[in-house]
Image 1 (tube, rainbow, N blue to C red):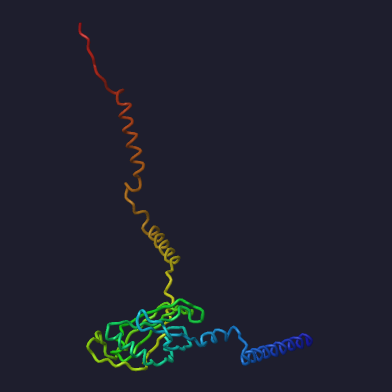
Image 2 (image 1 turned 180 degrees about the vertical axis):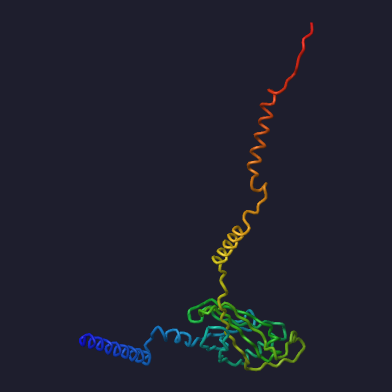
Length: 254
């Protein structure tokens, strides 16, 4: 009995020592920067994402870098920081000319944020007059699928700024710096219809209806086949056997 108690106590001490060592090793791995399943997800969610925003002054202009956005999350709607280049004198003149002549101002972003070799873009445009009327205060919304792929791009002037539709005949002043609010919107997956449970519910309701109310069909609905068979039998008997019960009586007179 003493031997069994001593053996059990020894196993208990070994288990406690092993558990303490495992926890210590895990803490050292995390502290040393080793990726574990627990901190891999948190690290991925906090990874810094960057997105280049390019712009062009008219459809015939070449796109150049407007700014670089930086953000950490692709969940929900995230406000990103945006470092933008100021407009040079040539760009200010181009924006002013576009505004006076009803031209278009364009921006674009790559469809894949993390791929530097990506050549596909998502673009949008706005009236240059509206941009100048709002003093280059705009709101850019980038829609992603949550996996680093851009699926939509929206550019509007800031709602608190004046909204000018026609700049012809006006004295327009174009500032050198943008005042931009950038939003990264990652759409959540929509609900998936539960077809299997719905079909099971319909089958259950049908079975309960039959158990409670029985067969509610009318007499004709139940026995229409037998009625049709009987009708055809009656017609056949009248057609081929009707001559045996009657006839023509002939009398001969001399």
